[in-house]
Length: 204
Image (cartoon, rainbow, N blue to C red):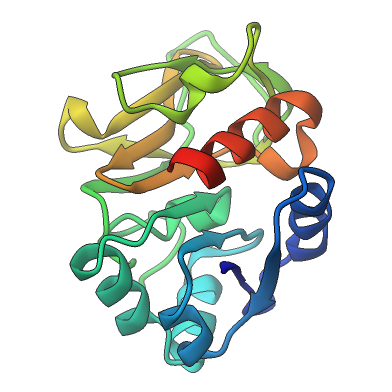
């Protein structure tokens, strides 16, 4: 069973609707037992980093997610805040992240002379990086919908799965083994998001 982790972080309904449109059977749950039995996991989210980690801790899911992904090899896709939670830390808060992938999350900072609106909001393209990127399954021009003020900075190049330009290149997708994360809202990105989600479900 494909399980969307639902701890009240938002966009669960939109994600389930897109999965149904793809003919994918999925359910939303915060039950540790159901998450332990999942064949694939999706972790969506909007809002603040510390709130996200607090919700996961309150439902007893931090250890479960680490166990299922790092030990059992269950595929996981983090979306927007859900992606940021896969890393170690965020400049947005004080909490420790899940630590599933080697990156930290930082606030946008632009070179002198570049004044861009934060949050980065709207449609932008995302280029795949590395052979294991889910983005290779998405048709060009790979346009996705973004709403975020923070972005990932990976420790090593092999963690980077996709990049986007906004006042300079930043990491917009991450990966490590069968763990994937995208900063954009795949569930709101029409045919491009559908292609990415379908590839994750079929092959992630």
